Length: 167
Image 1: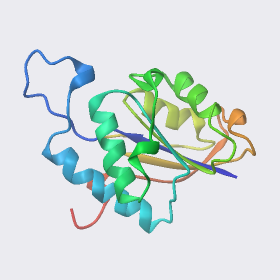
Image 2 (image 1 turned 180 degrees about the vertical axis):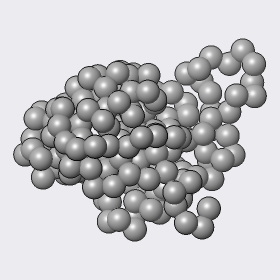
Image 3 (image 1 turned 60 degrees about the vertical axis):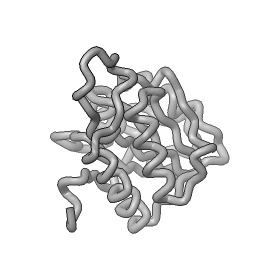
Image 4 (image 1 turned 45 degrees about the horizontal axis):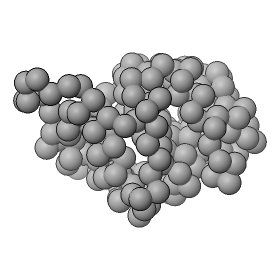
């Protein structure tokens, strides 16, 4: 079984007028919360085989902070332009291209695509709200990444910084 984690980027800064959306950075809360998410993932036994992220600065920064917390080499993070503001179908298409040797894949992106992809992949009722740094962790009911599609995932859990203890 494959394990897929869909993760929305951390809280981003809006204080630089004129900065385009793609180049927005994490704010201090985003920088603080990403290691907390990594710790929660580590506590759940998540060991990433691959990490993919949108090319947006805030998503890449989040991916790097979480990867570091999971002792995953940041030099191995795969950036993918298609994940920037991606639709749920695009997110699934990216997942389907994952190398078969990978058992656990972390994908960092943006709303509304990440939230909608969570609902699409889940084989049951899903999450109502997908705030910044929300995580949806699935066990895919497939043997190959290429088989990931609508209703192929069992949602193991979902959480965000606000739902974690010791904030």
